[in-house]
Length: 102
Image 1 (cartoon, rainbow, N blue to C red):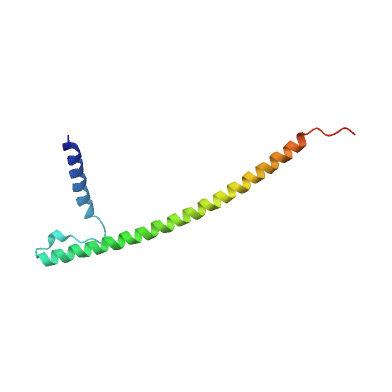
Image 2 (image 1 turned 60 degrees about the vertical axis):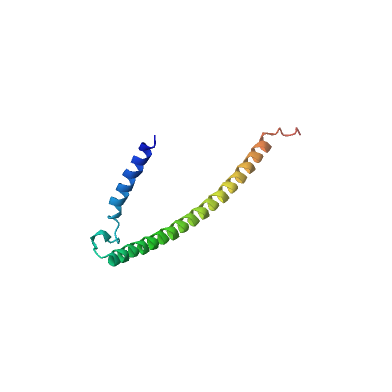
């Protein structure tokens, strides 16, 4: 029963490893023969990825804040429109009332 999820995970891990080499800025560390140089290469990649992640986090937070401001603006517009509709409905109701005979 556990073979299917393990196979899917393995396929995803292989695909992720293949795609990782396509990330601009990452170094191919498997080419290094000396362990110290390979470790340094991997550390450089980790630092690069952490910086990229921090950048994307800042951008996402800024987009989220902008979206929240836009939602608040739309909510204010909706409230104003609801008030205008209510006012018009009151005016229509007043017009429909029978006028007293003179």
